[in-house]
Length: 484
Image (cartoon, rainbow, N blue to C red; front, side, top):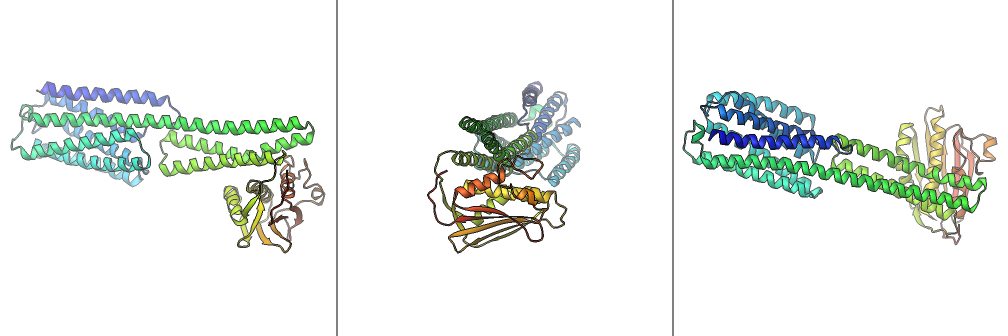
């Protein structure tokens, strides 16, 4: 009997050892997703516990008073249950430092308590105690897995839930058998066959739960690779669109001006594509560290989608500007448009410690193409940010105003209190290939004027009172019938 029971423990230990090393070598070859440390540590603790129990069963004489190695084995089983429950908890939210410290301390308390029970109690009490503790952890696991499945359906998590439910059933069953049985067990041979069966099946279910977690992590790798491939394809498509547009412009006109226009496309796309690249790197880093929770994952993916949509809108609007396509205008809320632009520039504004004074009349609307107007506002606000970045003024500020005029137009003013623009540079400010900055090709302001004029409006530069630059442009509030 001893040898047979020990053999069961050794077989399960060898299976878990093969799972551990197989997973370790598989995930070591993966760069995108690494296995959760709680799960791997739990599997290692469970594997060691099974080996210790298997060896202990062969040598034990009085199961009511076993050797110290049974305290070590049961402590490892407790640690494995704690770590597996923390893994399930981490699927929904990060494990706090207080939880880590608390459960580490509880493991030490368990070791001391079980050692006392080994000397002062009997087999039935110790086994019942372990069944109760295991059942608590199984209930916690099932709750966390069900909660995760509501957010992210997964067949592997379903298998984990079923395996944990089976573990709970057999743990409760073992407890019931001990309560119902009136035997005093001192030898291995005295243990009821049904109790041995329930114990072995519980351990088998535990091994299946580890396999289900391994399959879930492999599933996450497949999803991560598919997601990265999709994002890379989207960026490649945008880059191909850009190259195609540049080639079309160069074929249409080989002059230096046309070459500059094609460069403007790259200039406009740099920001959203650069942001996408940084977000992808950040996503890969979080996946590699196993710290990606559902809230952060949704935030990153929403940002990537927004950047890709913005890049696509830029390509579409630039294509219409430099082709024979008619201008597609709609009624836009100027206040909301500014809010969307400021949300894009917010990190840069915050890093430069720039204050924003926003004074937009309620209900201010214009008839314009939203994508093209967004480009104009982004260019003007970015110019103000760059001017203030090199300015020595103490309180850096960008003032944005919007109001109705009496001639069927609205007026938008974007001003800063930086160093302004020299008189010499003012004369060529809106000309192609003219730039007052040390870097850049003088494309942004030319493009702004091109878009505003295309909409039937006008744009001008003025020196700001008290120093700095002020750009004023008017837009019609009535629709216009005008092509590119």
